[in-house]
Every structure is written in C-alpha cells, then in structure tokens.
Length: 261
Image 1 (cartoon, one colour):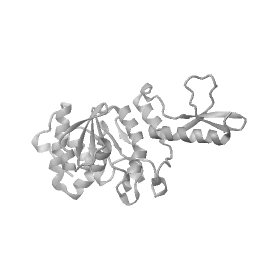
Image 2 (tube, one colour):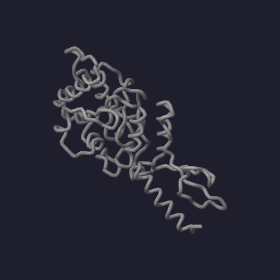
Image 3 (cartoon, one colour):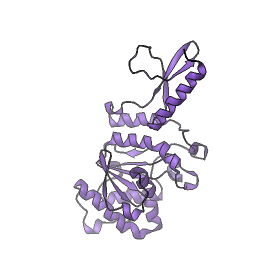
Image 4 (cartoon, helix red, strand yellow):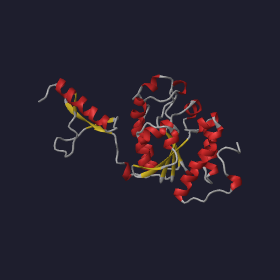
C-alpha cells in the first residue's frame, strides 16, 4: 500500500491533470473499490479512504437554468486566482436568457458591476443596452457575460493567468446557452476567445467558427464612450450579426448604437 507521502504526490499530480482540463473544484465522496470508473487519486481521511472526484457535472442532462446554477455553485466564493485578494466584492456571473440566440461577452466587471453582481450595468452597460435595442431586441433576449468574473483592481486589463483560470467556466456557460452567435466585445474578449493576438481592425468584419457556434468581434462599449466615432463601425458589426441570424434590419431612423442616449 502506498505511503501517505506517495498518496499525496499522486493526488497532486491528478489535481494538476484536472486543472489542465479546466476542472478546479473537487467534492469528497466515498466509493467502493469495485466501482468502475472511480478516480484513482486518493487521500487518507482517518481509518477510511476518500476519493477526490471533479465537480464538473453532466450539464447536458440539466435544463439550461439548472446547468447555469450548477456552474455558479461550482465557482463558489472563488479563490482560484489573485483577484479574490485584490478588492473584488463578489462574483459577477452572467445574466440574461439561458436559451439566447446571441451571447455578448466582455472583458471583466467594473466598479458598478462589482457592487451589483451583474455584468454591464454601468455607463458601458447602458450603451450596450442601446446597442441591443438598436438591433430590435431587448437585453432580456440575450445572454451577457465576461471573460473573467471578478473586477481587477482599478479596472486594469485582466492578466493572461486570470483569463486562463476563469475562462473554463465561461466555456461551460457557452455550452449551456448554445447561442447561435457570440459577440466578443473588445480586444481582450476577442483575443482570449479566438486565441490570437491581432489588432481589432483585423479581427472585426468576420464571422468565425467557434466551437459549435459562430463568433463576431466588435468594440467594447467602454471604448465607444471614449471614442464615439467608432459607433458607426460597431453598428456595421451588429448589422453583420443580424444578417447572419436573418433578423430584419431596423429602418434608417432607428439605426445607431447610442444616438438616443
């Protein structure tokens, strides 16, 4: 029988393996030695042996609402990266229609989002609402999330490690919602999702294959607040998305992404 130190080493190796798969949480559950498919990593717990099993559940067997709740439960009061020690108030998970055709993905929560626990509720969120309204739909019709779920201090750009640590949960959200198309808002979202390092001018204007769906890139609403001249370019991107989905384009007087704010 392996010694405690050997068991600990085996467990550490298995945990590293699961982390590479994007699985971070583990529950303690008793299993019999004869159980098929039992996870090999074991830890001593008094006179009995308790095996560590990943908390990645079969979300495909749940309703979208149940599956999103399960993902949120798995995140818990997250301490997986340094952001939990850098002033974040709460996890900002995601909001909207669990069966949405369109999913908007931004960069990270800001101060207002950190307080309210909902993505895109500040000034940038108001502009995003205008963008969605200009498409002839409501905020409640889409699903909205971010690459990372904690506010970086001072609203700095998320670091690569933070994105890599948090994005597996976003991938699970995407798999549950199953949008027909994703709209990546800004460079961080676009580069993280597409796995490329290119300028926004090159990333925009295309519809990409992304896993089992499609993906388009446009400017982040916060950038549009700083440079309103790019609203027309953003509207072109949204029209491209609408055409792909077969949505009717609004009449000329209704077009725009914030002219009515």
